[in-house]
Image (tube, rainbow over the protein chains, first blue to last red):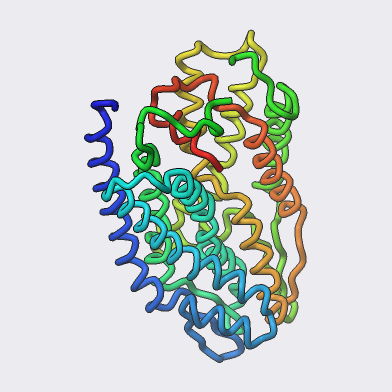
Length: 179
Length: 175
């Protein structure tokens, strides 16, 4: 057993936990505050992430609604829940599921980026749809909170060291050894 | 290990990254989308939304979008190109290790494929409100994003990173 790793475990766990908790806190305003204000022909509409996805659904854009719902609501929640599970597993020191947990970590690492969809979407719409009184789109504070939550979840995933999931920390999985 | 070739051949990452860098120029300069309503037409470049956020006080968000959607993808392409450049123009090995670490970090924050999806979603969403048409910059951006994905898939980070480092362990995690 590498003497270096107890310190790594402690640091990795505490930093990742702090970032994950901060991300969870930021998700609350991100989902409650409006992310976009839309004005079309004098009609104003303020949308949260969820109401934006519901609106797409009501307009018959089911695929888009599912994409937005998955990227902006399901993925952040799944990522935080998964990260919580990894942190608890690492704290307990049970290494029975090391391989599965490491795969979960890789999956969380991969899917996190897709949550940025709503941030890019709001930015793009705000830049393009500026037609004065005919139609305008304005980003609102919810999108800032959401972007912060996404950044914090990505940082939390990066701070977590998957080596602490393995019984012998110095070794990496045999099938995943350097090519 | 240094001589190890990727699945697509040792030159593949260099070819893909150079292709991406070439496509990045029109992607950043040409119109992505044009939108019109009752004769009023607006053209959106990659930076239009970022500039709007910046001017409206959301500067951190503007920086984040600029970094993840434009700066880091281009920087990552350039880094991969340098790492796979012919020996006579490559840097000292310590710099190569630094670049490889930097590429690893940039890879986590460069999201051009997410930006592509966001533009497609925006296109469909705006279709009912305004008349939209896709500009050449969008196709170039798609090409750049694809080149980046292909360059990353054929890029072998390991030769430059000592195996004992935390980054090496992260890289070795199964996917």
